Image (cartoon, rainbow, N blue to C red; front, side, top):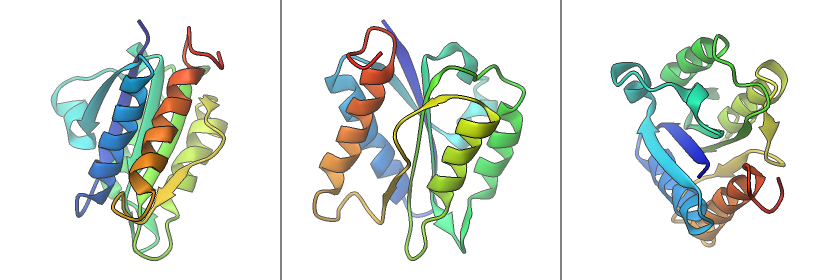
Length: 150
């Protein structure tokens, strides 16, 4: 069974909530998904390279992704992410640049097979937010080996 890793960096909990709904969508489509805070990657010795899909999310704070996420992205340059399924997401108050910057890094630097675009939500509590995040998870699951879009 294919496996996915969903990594998030959250300041107020909104990005974490979006991540949970993405995992729900993946699970509903038969994809086993692990949800981890960015701090757990190094602390727990988690190797993103063993997963079929990696989805990364960060809150946007003062127009930037969170520093812990920048650090993770630099470390992932050494991992073999090429050809893996990927996606990015994040919550924001005003501008929401983080998901797009993560997406571009995953697509152009890591050379991953990306979802059609990043998922940007102010909050999963916004009308349609839960379903939008779940649908993003379903789309990622379908792009994995043995998925319908594979």
